[in-house]
Each structure stands twice: as structure tokens, then as C-alpha cells.
Amino acid sequence: MKIISEAEKNTAGIQQLINENSLFNQAKVLKAFREEKISDDYFHSTEGYGYGDEGREKLETLFARVFRGEKALVRPHFVSGTHTLYTSLRGLLRPGDRLVSVTGEPYDTLSRALRGSKKEEGGTLAEWNISFQCIEENDFKQPDKESKIKAILQEPTRVIYIQRSRGYTYFRKSLTIEDLDELIKKIRSMNSQAVIMVDNCYGEFVQKKEPLEVGADIIAGSLIKNPGGGITPTGGYIVGNARLISSISCAASAPGLGKDLGAFVHNKRPYFQGLFHAPHLVGEALKGAVLIADSLEMAGYEVDPPANKNRGDIVQAVRLKNREELEAFCQAVQSCSPVNSFVTPVAGVTAGYKDPILMAAGTFVQGSSSEFSADGPLREPWVVYIQGGLSYQHVLLGLSNILKKIL
Figure 1 (cartoon, rainbow, N blue to C red):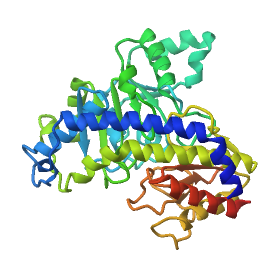
Figure 2 (tube, rainbow, N blue to C red):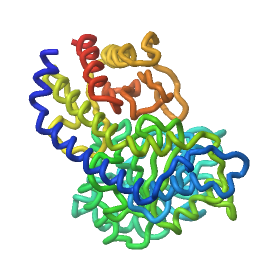
Figure 3 (cartoon, rainbow, N blue to C red):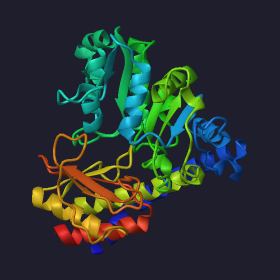
């Protein structure tokens, strides 16, 4: 508690800035709810085809307004963030096109969906004759690479993909809105026609603007991360250009059906309430992240980002010394969780990942990384990624347990 108390003093100014940012985003979301005249009539579930579901349509209009897009697709049928992103790409790309990631290799699960890792895995983009290439974001800052990058971004490149969060890549920083603004301007100067899609997972409401406000065409993410507010039980969202959303909706259902079908068997209240709660949740998670960063740095650990750096997402990375510390860290998080605190997390094979993953997630919603959780792949460097927190107080208690375990 001595370390944590000192960290709270060190980060007081940063915490205040986070509070101000949360207030701005809460006002933005509240305004959208009021302008859309949200009523509890929109909360009811639907069955069958879901034709004429006014609540579903109102929820999507609300997301479009909040994230500054023309149209949105918000559905419980997306099983994960990866599924949401892959569906978006399938709707935007055609055989012979090229997809280019300008933030290096994507997160493990998406990379596998693009390239595939086993012959028996069908449906990857490679199978549809869609080529895939990677550029590192830092390459744009090197003048000698400009002509090579420009050539890669030309036809047949149709979609340019930007991953806002770091994924399981320790040396890659998350992208702030300012970073995205600069990167998108450079891309547009080289190819003004390509579709720019941003994986916004973990980045929603971290700052006052969203990627569509600095030139992105499409953003997508998971509802059990930031925009679900720790309340939404499942699903994903896609927001952006109306024509592109129409194409994506055909991939999500079928050509000719698009957005018009899709029953919400769930009661929709948690979807509306989760979005309303999201700015506060993100603020709590960010305050917890800076406290973790400062405390563990004082304890002698390498952290990224440091407490005083601008953040593009809610993820806090900590570099540990060995596998034993990674296991102890995750056990400390799990044992301080409200759900399954008695369970000991062990590394195992997880769908979509190439390395065994150690995950601590005693969460109300299974796998929800908007709740206080920690995970990391069993590979060097031994890095644990902490995210989420329904309340700052819970993160503080979890941090206290972590320090007891690893010091």
C-alpha cells in the first residue's frame, strides 16, 4: 500500500485529465441518447427473421451518431472482435484485391484468419485469392522507404488496415488519435481511393475523438470491450461510410438481405445501457492502468506505456522476468476477481493463438477484457497485458494483490 499510495500522488494530475476526458465523452453519449429519443420501448427482444426491429435500428443509429459515422451494424451475432473484423474485410474485399496492414502483423487471431496456419482451415482470405502484405507504422517516418510504400499501397490494394491497439507485440505502441490523423493523411497522399479500416478494439472513448473523425472510412470492434461498458453480454459493432456498411452487411448475412434481418433474441437493454456506461468504464480502466504503470515501475519493472504518456487504448503492458512471474501475476489477478477467484489459471491452447496463453479473467461476462483481467502468451519476452476494470477501486485492490505476489 505504500507503493500504491505514492503512485496515487504521482499520477493525481493524470487522473484528473482522465476524469475530464470521461466527462466529455459521457456528455457526447448522453447527447446522442437524447437526440435519438431513446425509449424503453426499444429494449424488447425479437425472434425469427427480425424484420422491422425498431430497437435494433435505433441502436445502430445511436452507435453511428456516437462514433460519427453514416451507418452502423451492431449485432449480437458477432462472436468476437476477430469475427467482426474478418466480416468487415470479407465485405470490403474481392478476389484479386490486396489487403495491406500498415501497423505490422495483426493480432494473432486475425492474422490466422487472413493467412491460415493449417491446410484444414478453410475460408481464409488467401483462399479467396486476396493477397495480404504488412508495413510497419514506423516505416512511414523514413523518407528512403516512401517510394516502396507508395508502390505497395497502389492497386490492387483495396483496403488499408490499421490496428489501433498493440496486440501481443510488446514493442508496438498503441496509436493515439493524433497518430492516426498523421498516418491517415500520409496514406491518403499515396492512395486517395483505398478504404481505410481501423480496428478500434480497446481504443473507444480513450480520447475525445474517434478514428472516423480523422479520416478513417470504417471502424470495428467488440462489444465485450470498451463500448459494451462491462454490461453488454456479447457482439460486435461496425461504423462508417453508408455504402461500405451496406457491403459489409451482405457479408454478415447474405446479398439482398443485408441489415434488414437479424433477430435480437437478447433483451436490448444491456446494449443501450452498456454504451451509456462506456465512457465511465473506460475512465476507470485508464485510471487503473496509470496506477499500475507507476506502481510497477517503482517496483523495478519495465512498463509500456509509462504512466505519464498519452494513451491510445486501455491496455497496460508489463515486462516480467520469467515464466514464473507471469504465472504469479495472472494468479494474483484471478484470486482478486469477483468471479472464479478460487480458480488457478494455467496456460493452454486457445483457439486462434499460435502460442499457449495464460489468461486471468474472473469476469461477469466470459472473456470480457473491459473488466479487470490479465493475459500473456508463453513466449519471450515475458510480457503480461492488463486491461479493463469496472471500477478504479477494484483495480487498486488487484494491484495490491499483484505486488504481494511478485515482490
